[in-house]
Image (cartoon, rainbow, N blue to C red; front, side, top):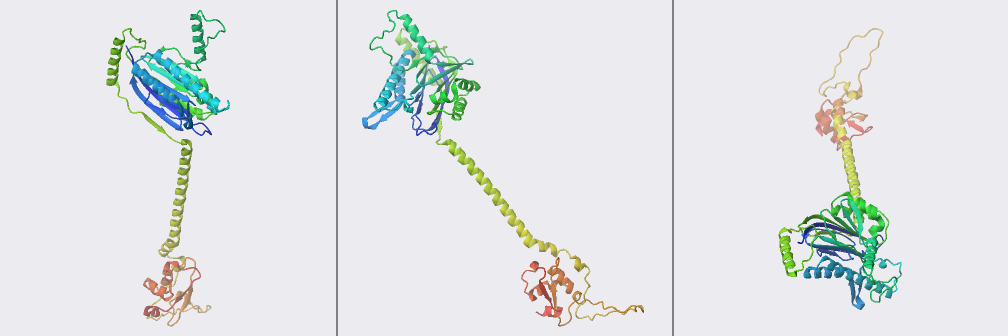
Length: 458
């Protein structure tokens, strides 16, 4: 009986330093694919189903409009996936078909590079492929060129579809074939390509897989990838951390990392085999598909991409800092203006309400209608009479105008009180001396003090 598997997957792809375009592309079970013209992209998916196909490729696409030629690894993967879904083949048959298509695409691209005499040191020769096929509770991995696939199970981290697996299968095949002679190669049976296929394994719950490009492998290495895979059971977080750590280090090419996690396995443990009776197997498959349709409530695939995200973040922080500085400067300018206005207009109002020290001892004056009289007091014989009249401390005589020089601490209020003892004459005195603002008299300013009747008549 087929198994229903619930998975969540996330992929990050970033353009390398000083690169014209991102040559990495990826395939996520047909729900999302990425062409290499997207420089920075992220995609994630959650789904339930009986079969999945995930892959990333590097430099596995070529287009020549003049020759009407377009070679794309993504398109070949899509065709293989569609074929396997329609024909309901076993996983072993799917893997062989994928292996053949990958080798053929690799040969076409290599031939194109050779014909155009592209130097071996050119980055276009760095072909890479990494794929993972999940079906009926089983899985197998494929790598080609510089692609890498790793698996995490029960805390154990191991590579899949590497050179060791290829050598072991070659030795097993040679041991089974007693007719193979040492050093003899039959024409037409040469090596078909660089693709390495892993064994077929049973799938278990909580299994995790990571597919990485050569750029990620060059920047981090296997040990660092293992540490990040073991840090947390969240595909989005792990993919983001691997990409973030790789961007801090030196590498050539572009970055692509895809993390797939098995959340749940329903049904059998993954040892399903095809029955001899094909019709019976088809009925079982149809039954499983109906169950999947009832269980599957797949949210839409979410993805986002941003160009030059690092530059944008830097510009945003710079703009925020400049706005903060401008705001502080404007606030200080407004505060300074406010204090300055208080200093100019408010200080005289404060002084008006306070009597200066000099006026506290001023000699009271009498009105012009009254004639001042002094009481004669006999003086001692040995003392002479002293003139006590102070012309500056009394009201000016009739027809006499006194010129008063403003001293420190004096105000128009104190001057009027000093000479007239009548604050109602402030406006009259200001009008007489052409003073527009009584609060803005200055030290050493000369103010003319006429008699009160003259001031009242104007």
